[in-house]
Amino acid sequence: MQLLHPADVTRERVTRTFRHGWFGLLVLLASLSAPLALALVNHARLLTIAGELPWYVWLAVAPVALIVGGSWLLCLCALAGALRSSFRATNWIVKTTDEGLYLNLRSYQNRHFPDDAPTVAFLRYAEIDSVRAVRESYERGRAGERSTHNFGWLELRLLDIDTRELAELVQRERTRQGPERRCLGIRGRTRSNHVPVLVSAEGLVRVERVSRALLRELGKQVRLEEPREVDLDLPDGRGLEQRVRDFLARGERFAAIELVRHERNASLTAAHELVREIERGSARPQRVA
Image (cartoon, rainbow, N blue to C red; front, side):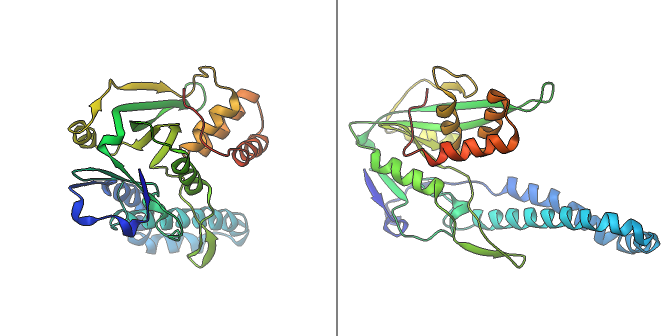
């Protein structure tokens, strides 16, 4: 296994590139922009209604409108940034070659991070014992309103490869603070929680499954195992802290907080603080059940 900088990826060797699509982001952005389009079409009527409102109504409405409108604009800005990122060359998860495959450890949504450490791993097919599809799921929400969330991974079982340095790089990418950026005149540090690659245990690397064709492509070179389904809500011998770490390793902070609230009957503030403490104490990924 080799750990490389993005500039070290040999483009001439690449046979196929697997990346995130942009269509879903475009639909979401269009849906969120619909109120703005409606407001522009009916601006004359809206101005008339606004002019007829008494001043004391504006005292109550204006602060709420500013907060909601500001949050909405920030969401639009974030979605537009993610959509732009999906069209860039940095949007890729796996690049295959005749000898092996490149894995992109950095989310394409974090392309603004500095290139100060290796963020690409190259695995030769001879270093991979097997590959299998893994589907993880969990449920969140109140009784009667619960929804199911799914993760799709390809799990690579490696042959006598030390993955500790790879695990440290993945952990660094997941927890590092983003560089300062400006959006709508507001300065801040942004970092996406999207996780494209994780080390679930020593010698086990999971890659986000963005295409069914990726499994078929790898199946031409390495042995395929039977698919596996995992319910992350089941303890399976794991304590609360380990289950929280598992969610954090997948970029699911809100799911981790809701798990703590449910298990400990804790307030939102207390659950958030406990999750932060667990995250600070996570030195490296743990074994996934």
